[in-house]
Amino acid sequence: MTNIIQRSPLLGNIARFTPFNNVDDWFKNFGIRPFSMEMENMPEIKINLTEDDKAYIVRAEIPGAKKEDVKVQVDGNRVSISAETKQEKEEKEGERVICCECYQGSSYRSFTLDSAVDETQAQAKFENGILELTLPKKNVSTAKQIKIK
Image (cartoon, rainbow, N blue to C red; front, side, top):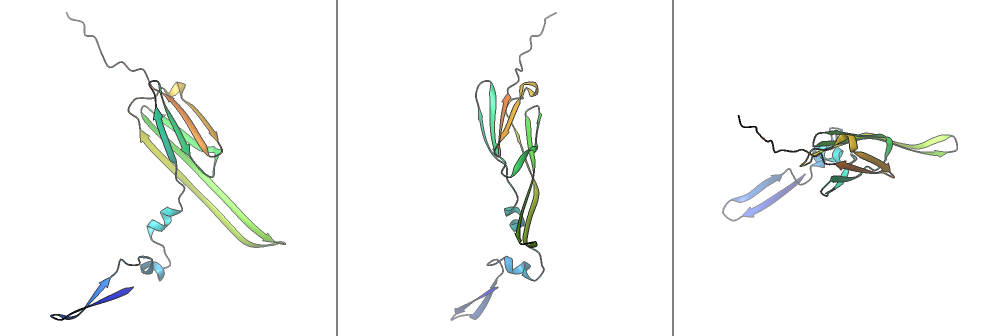
């Protein structure tokens, strides 16, 4: 931690404690890392969303995921994408394992569209870590004619 000492001719020495200079020092002796550091290693689903008159087009980057581990759910105008990722890297020297790095995690992304989606016509394609969704808009007529008696 850093101590800053200010000198003032009127007040003498003023010691000011600044605990926010290095947050990592707080956790050094406890054997834990701050929550913000944990989030840096979490996989992210990044999306591009475009639309035309008939459909929404979603392009989602899901690095490290396999096709069978990606799930898409559409409920009205709500779209949810989730993925499980697992990566293993093992370095061997002869028959001894020198280094083994494993990672397993999940990602989730959900968003709401302006119009409801026709789930029966929706299409999904996954290739090289890129998920492409074509989500046709539902033809919903909001106008209702009322019969006069």
